[in-house]
Image (cartoon, rainbow, N blue to C red; front, side, top):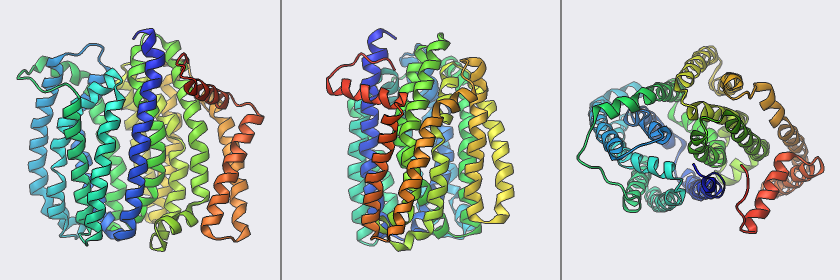
Length: 487
């Protein structure tokens, strides 16, 4: 990768990735709020059950090839087309399986409506095949502006359709319509703006080369998807779709914020790190910058969201969603750790060590299953707390290999994020005490946001936090239309 790419192009890619995620997630957030006010928790629970099986099937469709195409130094048309046709064949097979398995799924959860819902939503598997290559090409070339255009268009169109259907009493089918429209629109736009179409070529040899890297990611992703969705399956079976709806909404909001910020950084990091895979010192610099910067932004957002959870839920989702509050607070703590997880894992992938990645996933899932088994008899809130416990343990596990790979130890990582964590906790204590004023919910949140931002930024300025000064410098240079920033 040349000098221009490592500086101006990386920053430009990050800008468009943040804009894509920020814009789409912001609109999706508004759409979700409106749908939550129009629909019942149990209707959200039903769609969560369906997406479990779609997510698992989607892992097989992607088969780790998408990441392999991004990570591989040199790819050509034979690589892209071979992956496309193989993924399409897998999607057809899995759709047939899901179509005939739908009645058994509905019977297991005692929800007859799941039969038709699962069969319709499963069509998104084919759409995933048709846009996966385009996304890989965009990532390789850092053309995230194109992803912004497709994602924003899709979320706008699908959001309008979902809201209109919900308002007219379609229930869970409003959510189905929204998902299908979103995937179809993304696919259609990407096929128009990304100049790639499959050729009539196929190579088993190329598939084998890509699969030698991708199969480990496939197994890792499958383990992760099964593990994450296992909790939803247990909640849907042992409790009710309504409780699953509360659990899912509690996870969705912190996930939306963190995936927007941290996910944007990580999407740009993989191709950037891959270009430096022979320079471990530079890889360490980029990983450290990612962890420090992401943590500085995410820690105060998660702590602030946890503190304001109850009045926020009442205002935004209405009181029928109040059981979501404890889940929201637990998941805020869990998602605050994501910068440490993802930066370490991206470094491992970029260095081509998918074997280590797989081993880490196996160890984490074994520990997670043990925690899950212990927590199930204690109830649904214990299950959610189990996610937090395994997340904390996971930070140690994910960081361990990078001590040898890039000389970046777990202790160094926590030393880097400790200042941001400390300031965020101080801010959280300050704004928590505002609720004792017994003001209206809206006024309380408004004061908490203003005071929280002032306290956090003021402390960062007073203590001259390196990550804060870096972001200020970056912002000034962006305003001045400069690009010579070392990431």
